[in-house]
Image 1 (cartoon, one colour):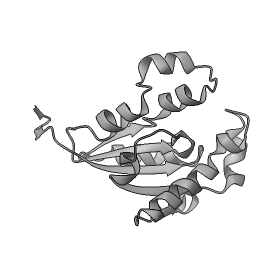
Image 2 (cartoon, helix red, strand yellow):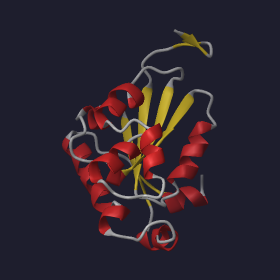
Image 3 (cartoon, helix red, strand yellow):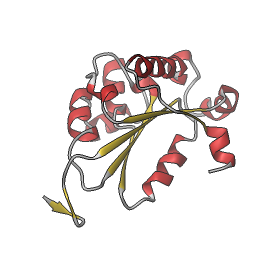
Length: 166
């Protein structure tokens, strides 16, 4: 199918994994400025809410608008055909929940965006009460370990350094 002067085909996927409040949205917006890039903002969020049952003020609205079957999201949205050469996926690490297909970690290029938790907490607690689960730091370590075990150690980007020198 021809779209935007490019045949719809398999795209190269870039996965950004971070904890919340790690400047990941700013980084996603910078990638979105590229003509050869499409971006997905937390494509696994509805699956995370569905699987965990966590409450959010916007939970029902989000679940009605986003696909909540994580494996369907991975297959059809994250790795589905596209119109651009690249697809940037902004993931929050805690949204990598059990039951997701291995394809998520096997395919694409992955990197981890980190930020000092002392810089995260002041803005984080305005949104959700901080907890070990909500911060997602253990999930980041698990993702890092899994990628290393697969022989694909991800680059780690310090958000503070990136902010100082984009």
